Image (cartoon, rainbow, N blue to C red; front, side):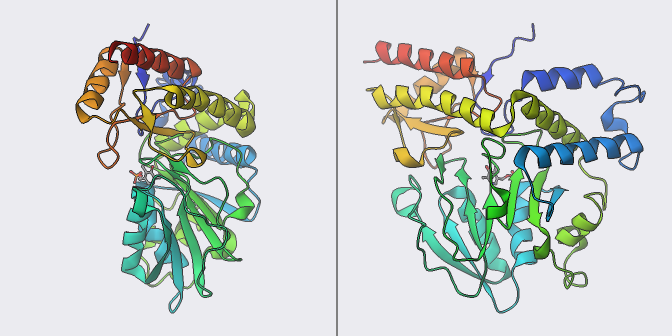
Length: 362
Ligand SMILES: *Cc1c(COP(=O)(O)O)cnc(C)c1O
């Protein structure tokens, strides 16, 4: 009835329809409050209830241990590229970065403004089409943390195993894979995710941070908004938070719980991705750009090998009701982002279309 299409955008991205419908139903009067959530004071009891429930549901979904804070911060994932070194890097110490694509490279470059940042490993030699061996890297003895981007949204790679940090704190950008599968939070010092990829609307990051990493010696030097302690001490309400985003993310957490949690979500994601990868592996026209063992379940880049033909496919998919399949310029070709909210039927329909296109263009 709404003429919706299959939207393969890398972010902001497709949302579960059930969630959109619930929001629609609550738009004019949120549960008897007489107002919409976007009209509500963030200091009101009703909104505090929404925020508390969202945090609790996220804790339940991921099994977040009690000694981790959950923070809702604005500025997107990009602000974390600066906040992480500003907060976690101590004078005279270093941080080790593993660069596996655009996003970890940006984080690495930004961090260099704040101290001694080392490049621990990189996969740039083959245009970030793989994840380097991270089982025995020369981690700096005086490293405050080891940094990774666990799923590279543009290059479509993902870690199969976490790096051996040799006892050092691991910081992970999970933006494009957050809540796509079960996660052992205790293996990390910090996990963060810009929510517009796999969870909610744009404009917020969720940071899950081990309490002992929050410092109290930065109050006089860091801009107050950039200090994790500010957000931890105020329950993410030092200033007006992104109320709307917290509300919608909370809806998605509820949706995932009802679906059966992250193990079930992972099963569905594997099933969906397998349909697309199997097609690519058997196609004579299209091929994936990532080494098979490092393929992402969320972002699937593929090419024909001809720029003209790539452009033709993209135009044809768009005309057929599939949108946002154009790949990022650094990889070219196409990219299908098949996040949690992309139904299996969407992937099947895309594969059917690509098969037909292939038959007509051989
Ligand atoms: C999109 C993305 C970012 C940047 O997110 P913003 O919210 O736009 O700042 C960072 N890291 C990853 C992995 C991303 O996919």
